[in-house]
Image 1 (cartoon, rainbow, N blue to C red):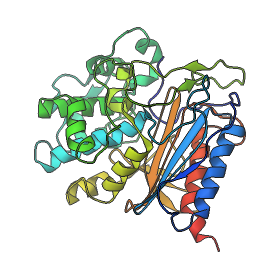
Image 2: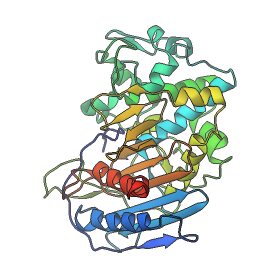
Image 3: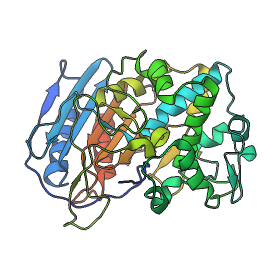
Image 4: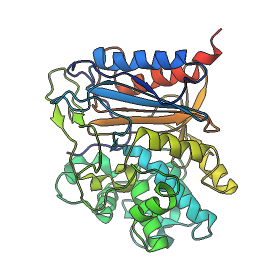
Length: 386
């Protein structure tokens, strides 16, 4: 089963599992706790109106954390989702990869102005692709014009295994989207190439670099990039349910918990938890991971096209302007049976991470992004209410 790691995929109507779950405040209620009540109400609506199997959210406000859930982690047993649940994070993986690249830049081991050809000779060529005209920065902010390999589902489905080189070859068999630097288009190929450059620059596996540079130092015990074609989610986790992005209400639901995510790798193959993502993005936004120059590079954005509404894209991170006018920063990801959003205030002091273990929605939302937007509104806009 293959689908875009980007979070612009559409998933619509589904079944309505029994409602379950509730709020689990870890500490005393944070100021503005009525906003958490609004979040809990939206979580229930995601299940009862949106038809999703289950949903969870963790809100961090300074040193305080609040966790809420609704629906189920497992539709067969009725087990509720938990704070410890691990899930596939899709394109949020890109933020981890970009962070590693920027750390290497800060150490002088590579430059954002280096070309792809310098690091990966002869890899980006054909159909007007030219690695000599694409630099590392263009990979990270999606201005390279390199074709998105996940747009060729037919070719992807021909192969049982997907080493990074084969994913790039699929992209090279198509014309480039535009001349490097002349436009913007979300391309998972950019991050496969970035992951390959990390491995070339360090001589080590990307999974090891992410673990040693980010997961271990920041205590992200549930966060990792699977090695090779390992199809399992290690540790406690919810089942992941998919309709294979079909939009008809009667589409069958499949269990996609176990699958080979090497097809996404650096572009979307990682696994994490809500707490880990809040901790990571809180530290990243708060300037505790990157040196100042690289921090400035990461959060310098370019306009996007045909992506999330009211969004701009930096280097592996995005900003989204909410309907109330507030702007939040972070990243989202979607693949089979798992959609996630991790966004917060620019200083990282307030964070909200949400995950649904289904890739469709009924009701007014259209897809889980509508649910996520409502949740962010509830947390980041209610304080300005009169």
